[in-house]
Amino acid sequence: MAALSDPLASLPSGVKLLLRSLHNLIPEKLTETNYPAWSLNVQTALSANLLLGWIDGHEAASAPTISKNDKTVPNPEYTSWTIVDTQIRACLLAVISPSVHKHARGFATSAAL
View 1 (cartoon, rainbow, N blue to C red):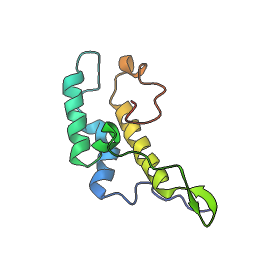
View 2: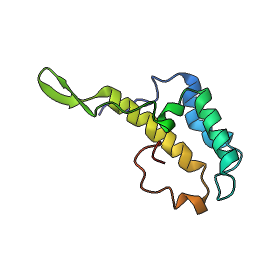
View 3: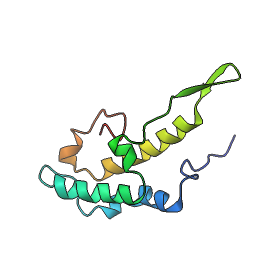
View 4: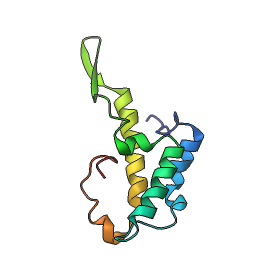
């Protein structure tokens, strides 16, 4: 069986640290009343680590598949984008209070969330 590699291995260490600790960097979870302050904290943390593009749509997903040697194969750029996007979405969900979390279900990307 092949060993599982770190899906974030190709990212700079600062970005990996942010993704693994965003929930510790945001002093309060999102509630019905603190969106402006919460949003500023989240956007600042993501922007400082060049990840805001996944939220604002500037870092769009590549095509899921590509043509290689006349065959359709998974696009490694899409796979990498999806891994980072899923990590960001998980981080965002970790800094949302239970009362708001119920409204955050069913979003497929961090930008949609």
